[in-house]
Amino acid sequence: MSSLPTFARPLWSLGAFASLAFAVHALVASSEASGKPGRAEGRPAEDTQKAKHREDLAKIGQAPRVPVEPIRRVVKRATLKGPWAYVLPIDHGVRTDESGHGYFRAPRFHGEHNGLDLLAPVGTPVFAACNGMVSAGQSASFGNWVRVVCPVPKSLAKGNQTPYASIFYAHLSRTDVPFDSWTHVRKGAGIGTTGKTGNARGDNIQPHLHLELIIQSSQRAALAERHLGRDQSTVAAAERFFDALTATCLAPNGFRANSGRVGRARRADPFLVLTCLSSDKPEYHSAPSTLDSWSRPWSQLYSAQAFNVDAGPRAFLLASR
Ligand SMILES: [Zn+2]
Image 1: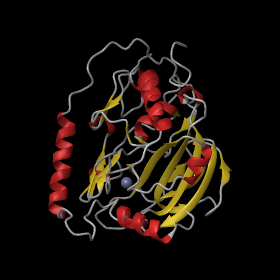
Image 2: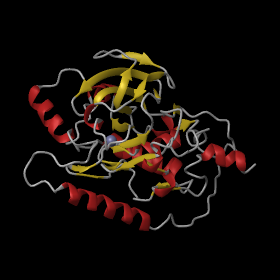
Image 3: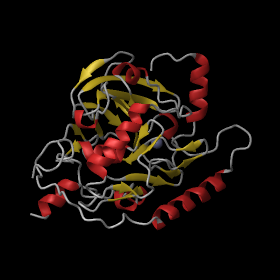
Image 4: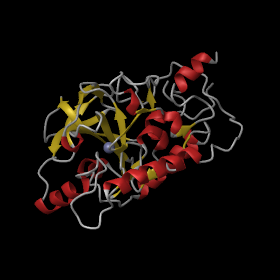
């Protein structure tokens, strides 16, 4: 029962930008949610984008499943609480609509999706994933956003300095934290509600929480993080974090993204991280009828040998007793 490393056990158990940088940000991110081509010349046509989405999804569907290796250590306790909390009270999976797909690294005209779009009706409460600092802001592309900055749990913090995560929540209808200043926040605290602000306004874009997770080498660096879409630089702390996550949680549970990708530069796949670190992920349910056709379950994108990715490890463990 205690054979798993400390962190793996609880497996669910803007301020003013410089104008130039802001312009770049707005341009790069302007079609983040829609996946539509920007104004720049030479962008692929929208039809081409949709074709790419279909191709990409087909590839994921065909991706080989996790090689079958025996799981030596299985989580047996269902009541342990993770160091982090899940970010929503419901789970309707990943947004996939006429406008594009919301999975991590889905194709976008500027490259790949930097976050994960969690489908959720407008007004769904959004929770802080961890104990740390919180601040809110607003931008043309991301609408109302909140950022939570917190230390990476000790078991995943390799190296001399504790790395910090910057967790970015976008397109919110309402934010419940101060704008442009940092205050303390407790994990699980309400920080706003989901919405369709910024470039998620379009009728063919279903409501969702855009969630991004960046690993930085220090609290100072994480607080200064701007989540600029075009900035794909990485840091050693992020690479070490991916290695630690893989060794401590993903490999022992046969848990992986079918794409085989844990991160993109310093950005981590939020689903992998939250599954490994947070308690109380709700079980997946199709969204209410007006949204249900836009809801993609996790099992289409992820697999795990030790638990059902849609239900989450907790439900799996309860059922197996
Ligand atoms: Zn998104």
